[in-house]
Each structure stands twice: as C-alpha cells, then as structure tokens.
Image 1 (cartoon, rainbow, N blue to C red):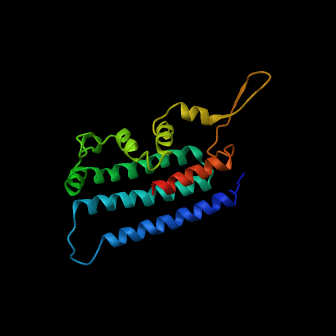
Image 2 (cartoon, rainbow, N blue to C red):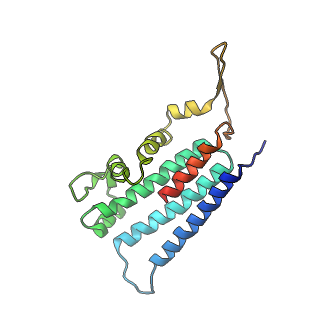
Image 3 (cartoon, rainbow, N blue to C red):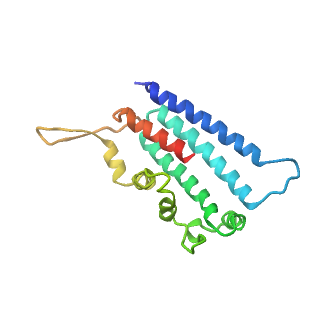
Length: 193
C-alpha cells in the first residue's frame, strides 16, 4: 500500500530541493577562479557540502517513502555535519583546524578558543541560543544512531485499553506518524542546512 504525503510535506520537500540547489551553488563558488589558492577550510567545506547534499537527498527519499526510522537517523547525521563543520568558527586558526581534521584528528579531541574540547555536547550548547530546538532534537535523535529503545518504541503500533496488550508493526513504512512529525524532520533538516 503506497501513500502520498499531504500538501504541507510536499511543499517542504520542494523547499528542501531548493536548499540543496543553493548549497550546490555555494560549493561551485568555493572553487573560485582557475589557479586560485586553496585553503584547508575550503577542503573541509567541500566535504561538508558533499555530506549535506547526500544526507538531504536521502532524508527526502526516506520521508517520501514513509521511513521515519531512517529519516531520523539521517537527520542526526545531518546535524552532525552542521555542528562539526561549525567548529571551525570557534577555533584560533580555522585553516589549521581543517587540516588537522583532514589529517585524521577527531574534532571532539580538538579545542576551541577558550580551551574547551569541541565535543558534540559543547557544539550543541554553543548553538542552542540561536536554535533553541537543537538540544532536545539532538538528544532525541542520538538514540537512532545506535540500536536503542527508540527503535523498539517505533515498532509499537498500539496499546489495548481493556486488556493492556501491545501490538507491533514490523514494516519499512511508518504510516502511524502524524504530519507534524514529518514536517519536524524536514524543518530541522532545513535549519541544519
């Protein structure tokens, strides 16, 4: 049984496509003129743009195919890209930071201007004032990266009121989620972009 999302979700999917076009244009602008100098942060930006384009395309596909579990997992990956790329703005030497990351250093082991490690929690905290939804969404989605109770709860189809029974739905589609849940995925994806 195949369903189609409502107009609101279709509109958000179209906006997400426009966002991807804008990110792609940004990437093209980074290349600059032939023989232009290239910096470490340019290289890191290419990686962030590639991952952004890939995850937003996949999120769009997962929403279109009603796959909430994978859409949430991918949104968490998408937030990771935005947070960790943003770390370059909080260090003393962004280009050196980028070269360290490209060289294999873990971002969460590097430090910001104040000497604090650039952990995901620290980066979420830095951005929380501008994106008040971020701490709760990030925390909630972290359960989707590793197998956890989040996956068990998503398999519950309903509760029996009289006999206190549980019913489960084992399926790749998640029709039970209301429109606002799908909209939240797409809104957060757009904000992270």
